[in-house]
Image (cartoon, rainbow, N blue to C red):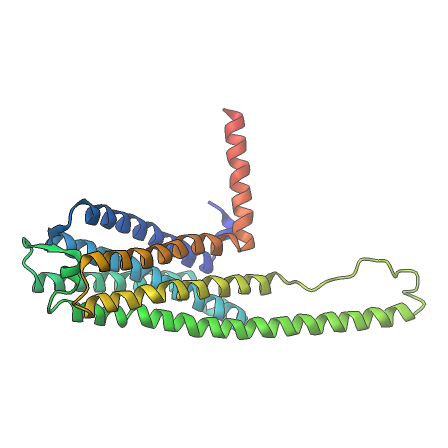
Length: 290
């Protein structure tokens, strides 16, 4: 409804928010079912695992796309205007979700091939099932870890650009001060010393810093959880009493950063704050009219 948000970057942001909704629904469903009983049918665990993997991978891929979009926008602005078209945006979003769906189905089929759908399994025994843990970890490490590696390189590139922008702002400030000093020495500007002076725009640099903070926290929060999954799958000595708290703590940290971090990323952008103010005004008018 907000025309100010009709651009490629915000289409990617909308896709990220959809992945959050999907992931929130699936993980809540998984948590309720896992806490309802100690053992469950292998088919139920296979469905939950594949759906959760689908939501997680969708979020990771959308995060990489947003980080790459931000990097391209500030590093090559002229090329960005030519490359970032709505059609390419839709294709990229569709490809991210299709890949997530395909790998989620691969996890489901791998589970069905290695378990009797009617057998009763605990969560720990399901993840550590012979013939299922290796494909699960391989697919996880070939998707989630590369996503975090890509984000790390994009963070480093954004940090480099942010430093360059900071140096440029500092140089502009020094040049501006030099020009002001020269202007004050002339008779023409002698009576205009107190006039307001132009200042460089810092909003782009601030937004870049917000992106760096968000994606750095994202990698820090998710890396221990990914390592915990690998430990849980390969260490067959772990029982549910050890595995469940380990996975719970890691998941709480990762989920807290995912949902709160995405809210921070959205609100940190000026056009989103402007849209939020417009929506609040509409709501106030609607309430007053009624």
